[in-house]
Amino acid sequence: MNISYTKEFFLLSVNSKGNIPALKSTEIYASVFAGCMMELVNTGMITKTDSGKFAIASDFDENYKHLYPLYEKIAAASKPISMERLFERKSLDKIITKFREMLVSMDYKDELTNQGIFKNKTKYVTKTEVVIEIVKKIRRQFFGEEALKSETICLVALLDVSGLLRDYFGKLDAKELKKRLKELPKSPSYALAKEVIGYVTVMLSIGVPV
Image (cartoon, rainbow, N blue to C red; front, side, top):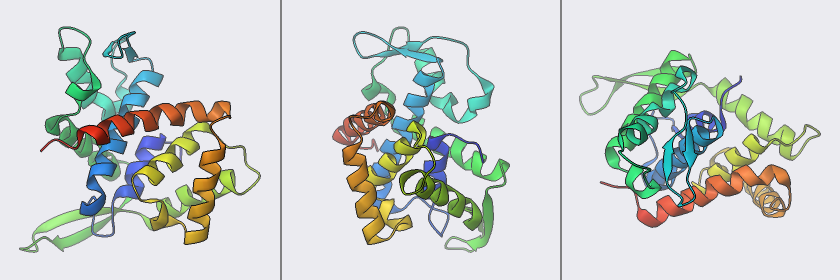
């Protein structure tokens, strides 16, 4: 499976009922938003100005359809736009919709029928084997001999800040992952994660818009 850490994070954020956990939704929304912003910067589609705002840098790459809601918002602005202005409910809902479409279209899901109050809804959860594959990758890179990649560091950092780490790792392993994250700031591989978590921190200080 070769997908971005932001997509992997979303796949792990969907609970067994096909929902974003309500008690962790603020942190999850902020993490998804931050990951998408970082992807747009890293792919060269947007650029961060000296004033810390964002502007279009290149045409949209159709391989990253989940990023389009944010790209569209930046493109519509008459001048570079701040992250705070981008972090709005309409954009967040569009982003989550794109991720849910990805979950269905890439066949990473199991289908739950007869959902909702009237038992007339169909929801989708991430396939167990997909979850296992992502978790195993994290274990191989943090606890095994496989090289630790900056994208995997970002994924674990997002799982940590969103409160999802313990959902997939036991108490001791989660504690060890947190410890290793704290030891990584001196590593060049940590630079990407540091910036992503910086974005999450800004978003959490704002709060998810209603």
